[in-house]
Length: 119
Image (cartoon, rainbow, N blue to C red; front, side, top):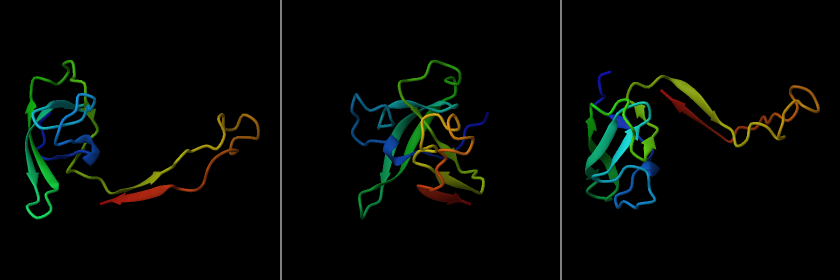
C-alpha cells in the first residue's frame, strides 16, 4: 500500500517531552500506526501566537510493515473521511449479562453519552 502524506492521531497520543512510561509519539520517537507502518516524529510545528502544537512532521519506515512493532501503537485516521454519525455510550448495558433474566431487551441503555458527526 502507498503511504499517506497526512494522517491524524489523538492529541493525547503526543507529548513534546517524552517519558519512559508514555507509549505515544514524541520528538525522535518511533511508534506503529495501527495496521500500518512505523513512524518517527522528526519535527513539531506550533502556532506562533499561542504556542500550541498544530502539526507534526514524521518519517515512515517502508520496511516496517509486518515487522515487530515498537512499544507504542496508535489509532489514526486518514484524510479520506466517510460521512457518518458516531454515538458514544458510557456502558451499553445496565446489567452484567443482558437478556439472561428478563428477556432479550432487558438491561439495554437508551441514553447516548455523546455524539459526533463527520463529513
